[in-house]
Image 1 (cartoon, rainbow, N blue to C red):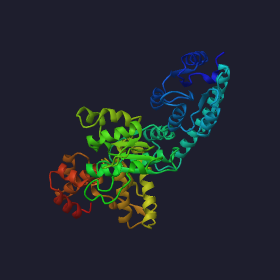
Image 2 (cartoon, helix red, strand yellow; image 1 turned 90 degrees about the vertical axis):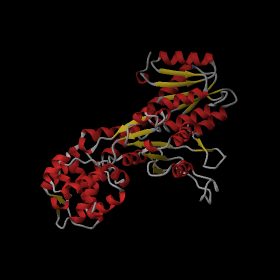
Image 3 (tube, helix red, strand yellow; image 1 turned 135 degrees about the vertical axis):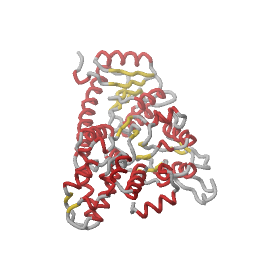
Image 4 (cartoon, rainbow, N blue to C red; image 1 turned 60 degrees about the vertical axis):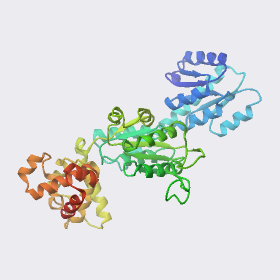
Length: 450
């Protein structure tokens, strides 16, 4: 008779004994389980990396890769995943040692398959309770009181996805325009994961030269290059046990992409100028403000690295696609900066709120935060009014329409502000977009207090 609780549960069975493997596959398939069976521990490691199993049953003594190594890989994927050890005569002590490392239970050969089935059923019942409690806790944490502000359907969907993915160890790719909150989401995921007690380290791959980025990530040995006067640990070492956030991964040079791929594949790397192989155990969350598939087509990004990074993808909507959240965000930033600057501002005038809600927001939430910070500083009364907001904020987004309603000076200020917002205050890129040199942009930005 098929157990209702066993319906659609996915088991990984690892045993180099063909007869035992075939027998257990038949038994568990007959009970309604989905079974993936392998004789090779190395193949089992690949299965664990690629698939979310509900339990793992593994023989302890196998050639090449032991059951203990399979156990470790399974628990890296999910620290609560039940792993059941099959052990032979004379290896019970090893099985008990495996339980101390996190195995759920063990069974000694020879055994009745029905006895093993009962152990699995109990393990799965416990695992379901753990998952339900874990998911509920994560959901409550994320949906109540988190810094991911908003109640629109778009942002609620993001919160729900974060709640599901945070407890797992799968690599994540966060996609979205500049200023949508990619690092905030990465920090929320880390804070709600089993790695929360360890480091969360972030680096912007587009802000550093190739040489400096390599040194920051991999570390370097003394004398590896001019100026390397002492050994330095990189972020790959410092983040071991925790989470490494790679922002603007789309900007990473191809030569470093190859080295990062090796880290993601086997957790090993060399410091710059080093010969000793080092290991790390970290979760990588990356972010891109550019379509990586488009870069792959142009030969600027490795497709094998893309699939390693993109275990699951989270897409953050731009602010213009969740306008119902703008008022809530504006008040959130108002209260934050009123406290920071010790000002008694509690409200936003209706005209000012309408101006905020209707604005195009090319710089997304980051732009809104910057404008609210400036408004709190500039506003002399207890209510934010339109005079505290940039005049360009209420201008139509089409340049020709803006030109019809602005003076040349206002138009210039509007275009510079828009270029700076769209490039996240990258003056070199903004100057290139505007067709002026950086020094001219700097003078004009200072003139218009941007």
